[in-house]
Length: 174
Image 1 (cartoon, one colour):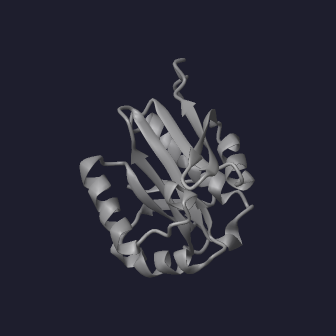
Image 2 (tube, one colour):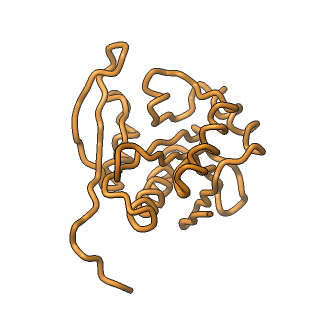
């Protein structure tokens, strides 16, 4: 399954992405908006690929997605949409510093939220970040997620949880 937006192609991560993932995590300026990013831990590429495959087998449509620029196929990072509680999905991403601030995070997040609601039947999408990460919080707000709670993530980092509930209104058919 491949998801496309105006400037991005999102496809399931594959073993061939391991080198790009390692390079991404080696960059100290990488933009992390994931639970792993909250505690500063870099994902182990082999373990992440194993998780991606396990998620895909257990719940098709969920998992880790490689983000590529539509124009030239350049790998810019990854997004994840993981099954959380019943009817809920957790959104996260890591993107190269060079593409940050150009709308790619918002575009990819929006594509995955729409996929979760329209294809996977998810009723709620949530994402958490450090309170000191205003850039990621702006992305969450741009895609319609709203503050759900504040909490302290060990060790003593103020964090926020944002969420979006699926609209109960019937959507017009096109």
